[in-house]
Image 1 (tube, rainbow, N blue to C red):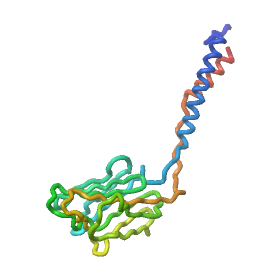
Image 2 (cartoon, rainbow, N blue to C red):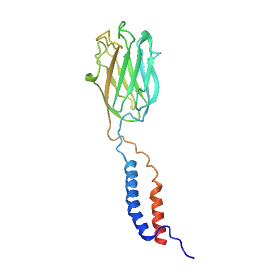
Image 3 (tube, rainbow, N blue to C red):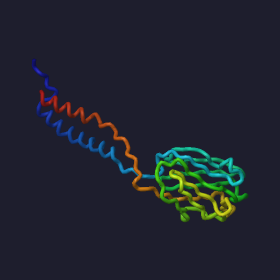
Image 4 (cartoon, rainbow, N blue to C red):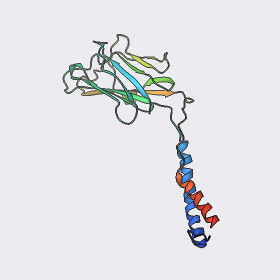
Length: 210
């Protein structure tokens, strides 16, 4: 039986010179994608967050769970027309308290912040004064890392934090930087190889048989 050639020999050689390098480039991209440089921060982690109310500990300003990514993870409104947002970044978190009018104050804005169910090991939490408003009472916050996977910040010395510098401001934000253990990296699954590499192999074999 006479075989029908898919490509004339010269055309087949030229095609291989084009397809094989391209396939190898794609294959190397797959390998590179399979082993990216992974961070050890909050991103991708589903954590619990609680911002406790001074006046009513049984009714926190924030009490929810979220997967950390782009955007603000936690928001809520509370007494006195205040609103709260807690934004978790890769290696920091920022609490913002806002009020709709210059009247009013930022007295007793919260009693404590608790981040729980964290997969990564945390070694330190430090207040970023350069990126934050000024506490007028309750500072410095006591940091408790005694429970693995849990961060607790407590206002001291009288269980409440104030931020009346100035009182007329419409919002105040406070940022804490977080350091993680550098050896706490979970391997990611390797994606399936692209089928184009297998297709090229079959095409080469067909060319040899013809």
